[in-house]
Image 1 (tube, helix red, strand yellow):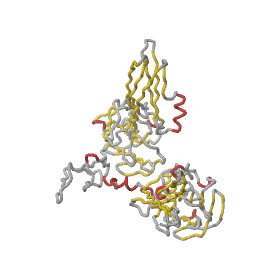
Image 2 (image 1 turned 60 degrees about the vertical axis):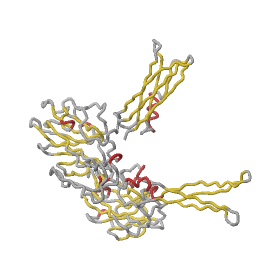
Image 3 (image 1 turned 90 degrees about the vertical axis):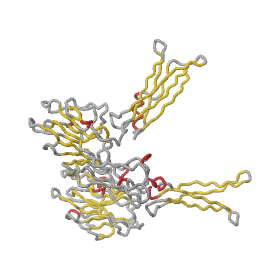
Image 4 (image 1 turned 45 degrees about the vertical axis):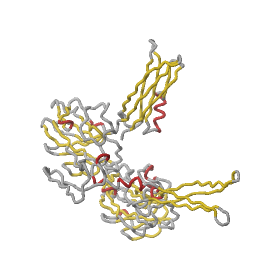
Length: 550
C-alpha cells in the first residue's frame, strides 16, 4: 500500500525565519499514538548571504526502523509589495509497502560477501574462505501465506554448516546488514545437498512455518508481526542459491470479451513436476483494463458486489395520523450474501414547535449487528491473537503448542462471540505425558481483537469462566468442585465443549455429553476459549450446529 500526502504551503514572511511541523523531541512524543500517520517538518531561514535556506524532514512511527520515505519538494521566493512570499509545493511518499505485487527477488543491499545475479533471483558467495557476510533480504515484504523458497545450487565441503533462512521486520533499504543473522529473530539453519529446497511462510494468523522440499515442517513461531521480509544467508558451505518460482501469480485475461459460442482454448507447452497442481481456466466479468489481477483467481470473491453488500440503507417515512399526531415508520435493509443479516435500529423522534411550524427531529443509530459481533453467521475458528506458545493452522480450525516444555501460554479465543445454545467443541488431537494436567476450556467477555492474552486464563481475575481438571472456575475462583469428568484423563480423540444457553447458564460437554449447569448469569456476548494446558499439544474445532440460535 502506498501512502502519499501532497504538501502545498504558502507563507507570508515578515520575520527572517519560520518553522512548520514539530521539533525532534515532540516528534518522539507524538509518534506514540500515530502508528500509521506521517509527519513533515519544514524549517526556513536566511543565511549570511541573504538567501533563503529550507530544511525538510518527514517521519512515520511504523515500528520498523528502516521505513522508506522520499520527499520531493520545490521552493521559490517571490517578491510582492515589499514582502517575500515563500512558496513550497511537493509530495511526501511512504514507499515501505510499494510494489507489493512485484516478483519476489533479492534487494541490492546485501552482505559484503554476497553477489546478486540472475536478475535478482540468485545469490553467490564471493570469498569462499569467509564463512559469514552472506546475508540477503527480499525486495519487498512477504504476503500472508506467501512461500519464500530457495534452492541450493552450489556448496563446498570446507565447513560443517550450511545456509540459513527466515524473516525479519527490518526493511532492506537503509538496513545495516549484519555479518550473521543469528542474533535476529525467526531464523532457522539447515544442512542439505545441492538441489534441495527450503522455504519460510507466515500465515494470516501470524504463525511461521518452515518448509523442506515442499513439505511443511509445522509451526515454528506464533504472533509473528507484519510486515516481514524474507532473509537468506549463504552460511559457511553454501556458495550459491536461487529463489524458486512462485506457484501462483500466473493469471492472464483475454484482450476482449468472448463471443457467444466462441471457444477459448489453450495448449500446455511446458510443465514441471515440482507441485502436484496445474492449470486453471475459466471466465470473468471483469475487464482487464482496470482489473487488479489477483495472485489466484480462487481468491476473487464477489468483487463486483462487495461495495453494495456493505451498504446499510435506511428509509424514514413520517406523516400525521387522523388524531393530528406525528407517526414515523423506519426501515433498514442490507443486500447481504450471508442471511439473515442482523440490523438494529435505535432512533428517537421529537416534534418541536417553531414559528408556527412543526419541526420533526430524528436522531439515532442504525447498526449492522452481524458486523459488530464479528460476522455472527461466520463459522467458528480461532482468532490470530493468541498465546505466545500457540500456533494456529488448518485455516484457523486447529491450534498446536510450539514448545512442549512450556506448560502455559497456549490460550486461544474464537473469532466471534458464541451464539446462544451454540456448542464450541474441540477435539484433542495430540497429547504428551510429561505433566499431570491437560486441557482447559471456557468463555470470556473479552474480544480477541484488543485482548492482551494471558499466559493462563486462571490468572485473569474478571470476565471469564473456565473448566480445568474436573472443576469449574469463575475469574480464577473455584465455583464448583468435582463438577464433571476430569480433563486430565482425556485421551487423543476425546472432545470437550462449552455452551451458554439463552438463559445465561453455562454447560460443559465431554464427547457430546452435557455435564450439567456449571455457572449461571453468564452475560452475552461471550467468546469461546481453549487453553493448551500442560500436556495438551494440539486441538481442532469440531464444526457443529448444536441448537445454536440463528
